[in-house]
Amino acid sequence: MEKLNSSLAARRSSLWLGVLLVVTLIGLSYSGLIEDSAEQQHQRMLTRALVTFGAARSLNGIISVVQETEVALQPAGVGVTLAPGQILDPVNDLIERFSWVMLASAASLGIQRLLLEISLWPWMTLVLILAGIAWLVVRTGSSAVGPRALAGRVLLLAIFLRFAVPCVMLASDLVYQVFLDPVYTEASAELGRAQSELALLHEQARSDREEENGGGLSSWWGRTTDHLRIGERISDYQALFARLAENVVQLVTVFVLQTILLPLIFLWALLRLWRQFWRRPAELV
Image (cartoon, rainbow, N blue to C red; front, side):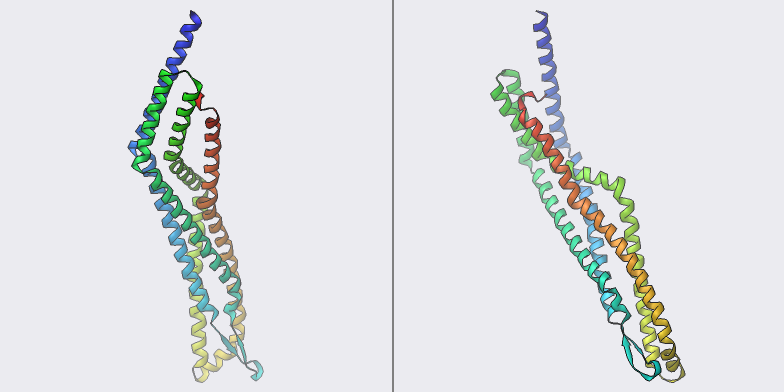
């Protein structure tokens, strides 16, 4: 008798836990708390990606203009034409590939947004409600393993379709806020400063060219001293290249992690957890 009472108490406790689980899931589905947070996170991430993509394209344009800068030297009466901006060829290629990465990140965010919209489809909430009610009815009225397993699997599928994508997006944003945000902030600020410095170097080169093309003593002096300035300018380009390369690599790391790798990792983890319950659906709660 004592064992029977203990079994009934355990069954009632399990039933109440099941009711609490279903009510909580339905409440979360209707409240929109998870989805609103995921949408805000997605919008912030998309804004960062588009701003960085625009900065990359703008920097690419400035580098292309600088690469056309030519400096005419006439040491010992022999004409030589140099283009110090050509030293930026490697970084220009890097910036172009960086813009491709940003485009891929934006495409990944678009896919995530589409999946989020699917999870927010009103019929998904209705399916979750019906699956939860059916699961509670089966657990209450039947002790057979087959119907309970079927009801459990239907409920698990409804939970996964409704909450997997928002949870993955929120988990990715949490990792970004804790680990990646300082890296992004510093690297994007450095990218902006490098763009300003590159524009300044180009303006200085253009001024030197105008001075050389002028007449009189200033033109002669410009042509005489330009071979000294060109070495300094090339050194400035090299230092700028090193900074740009470092910050671009950091930004690539941030966006590839947040928009591609982290969502896949968290989705894989959710799938692994979901499969563990899927194999034993009758034991759910």
